[in-house]
Length: 273
Length: 200
Image (cartoon, rainbow over all chains, first blue to last red):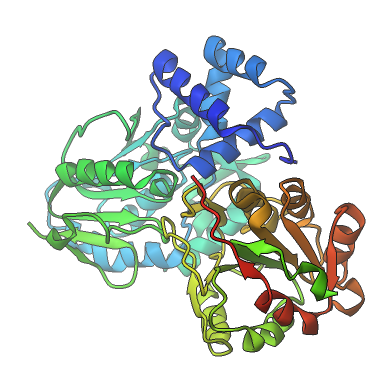
């Protein structure tokens, strides 16, 4: 697989065309990663001619939908990095309890696993009733999946283990109903989520939040774009609000880092002023 | 055997390994020169969450600086970068590291194939990739990509590997390769001459 590496210039050309035709800007994505994703899709769909592939991406709306879903990485799990969720439960969410109303933004929510994990945490801290989770992604098809609240039953064993490691005390299966090969999560959790498309590259701030989670999204962006997105988060975060990133991502090189304080060992920062 | 490769110019050495590869690293690292002139990248299959253990262990065996590979780091010579557990490690054209949390490849993340292929694309003929002991075939496709770009594929002698399957598959599938025993590897790496190759 992927023996054939596509030419850099060809790929840049395609990305330019995509911006022009579809309005999605991938030019500031980490190139090695986007190149690998494009090459992967090209091979997966058995193309042997790059210009045919480009034509299809450019002119066939249905295929572009597939392109968008495959080019962006949608690998995620519930309670992924259990120590991170333990930190949310113990160090972050209790601070939010004092607000009359809690607004949370999950940027790059993919198929919703993080949103459901967070809703479960909020529920266990008796905060869910006054919380609203805005879960956004660039990709409309993954949002459709997220909205269904249905996840493959095969993954639930892993999720349940993660949940326990993260400090969960209940029976994880009390949050869903198993049916054949799928698990349908409680409507009660889903009711507190708003799913919407949002492109971190081109869309603006749309509200003020007490917590913004954006995990394993920024690793795909180049430094310039990372800085832009940090500014967007900064504009969208209340004073004393929290910003949570993925375990290999960091705010350290951002110009305004001095206005933020790191929360213990996880990649969570609190806005001071 | 190592003599054949002394003139190989080298911008980076990447070592990939799975089960049974740690012993080789512990044998090779103490014998490496402190000034190699190029970086070493390690892609070793392992359970998540054990990064600092591996870093500390290897750091105790070498004067080269050992660190976990972080995204957007520019590769520096005489430094060892370890791919973090649960992320693929990619190399950008300006020799900057990228991390990627996409699907596992060969049931592995980090996948050796992914890093070898990405590095081959950037370093072309100035790349040396070494595949060690292991019990799946991750790394084989990567070595083929390295060869196709004019880089050098080195394989641990399957006869002396704790888990011979991975090096065996490489020997069978990679046309042009060099087979080394673990005790020959440090000398081989020490004798590579660093390349001042510029990448765009």
